[in-house]
Amino acid sequence: MTQSLHEIADRVYPDTQHTRKPSSYLDTYQSLLAPFQGRPISLLELGVHSGHSLLLWREFLPEARITGLDLRDPPENITGLDNVSYICGRQEDSAVLDATSAEHGPFDLIVDDASHVGRLTKASYLRLISHLKPGGLYIFEDIAASTKLPDWPDFAPMTKAPDDGDRFPSYDTGMIGALKQLVDQVAVGSNVIESLVFFPSMAVLKKVGGT
Ligand SMILES: C[S@@+](CC[C@H](N)C(=O)[O-])C[C@H]1O[C@@H](n2cnc3c(N)ncnc32)[C@H](O)[C@@H]1O
Image (cartoon, rainbow, N blue to C red; front, side, top):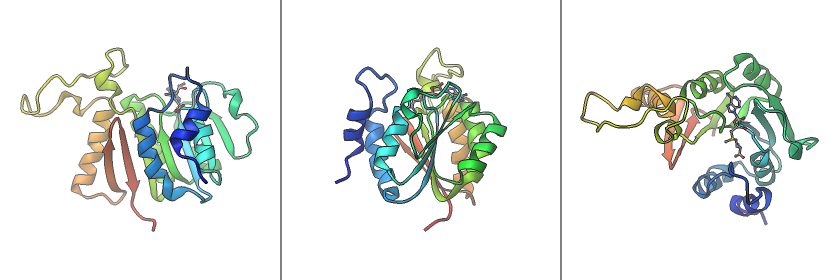
């Protein structure tokens, strides 16, 4: 019987791993990824760190081809694994993203767990969305980094009430700003985005098409 993501995470992440995906994320992923189980899909994760999330995906989606991209050297725990590839590069580097997509795409699932900086997140999205298959999911993690963490590179606290001025100051900055621009596209009708759904600290975009 297939193990749950929680059970797999308990096994693959050491207790001390601070980048372990939070429990609420695992709940969300459990339902999002279930339809992809047993299929030879292709998954790209931006942001690998210790490699444990790639091990998590690999166990939950054993038929999948998994690609991780990070600016760091590859972690040892994923070296030599059959269905796991590693790209050393920056998430905002369009040449790296194009080469990665040409070799490993198109993707059924793209997870952005890299910088959590709005302009870098947006740069990756704009480059990768054409390499996401119809009906595929583009998942943004830690979407509140720039509104909650004062030392974040694009920190922009939500200090105003919605009716104090014409809009929240976070509209143009941080990941929330980038996502609000996508909300605008959905609101007026997009031929790229079928839906954009928000979960605690995560957003999940579904591309139009597919079955
Ligand atoms: C939160 S950790 C990833 C954790 C991993 N996905 C997990 O769940 O175990 C974020 C990673 O993003 C990488 N990163 C930060 N900025 C980046 C950038 N501009 N391009 C590529 N990787 C970046 C960092 O080196 C770090 O390893």
